[in-house]
Image 1 (cartoon, helix red, strand yellow):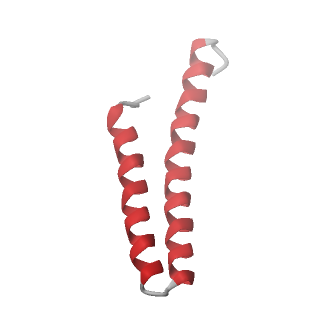
Image 2 (cartoon, rainbow, N blue to C red):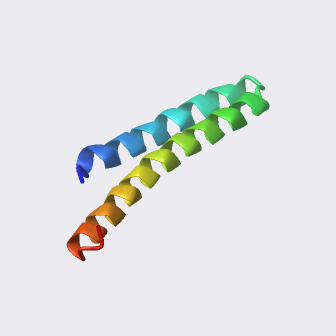
Amino acid sequence: MSFDVNTIFQIAGIGIIVAMIQTVLKQMGKDDWSQWVTLIGFVVVLYMVASIISDLFDKIKSVFLFK
């Protein structure tokens, strides 16, 4: 399990970039594109968190000798 502070900074960076892109697109009047950008950012972060949770469950299995 290779969880460190870099993952937290990556998630925060993705959030900041998505927020900036969404703001620019909304000011340009492209509300539909801004919603898509937000959705894609959410899916990317959700995938990152799901992989971290999967690693955590694998570690728990190995600790309790279920694997």
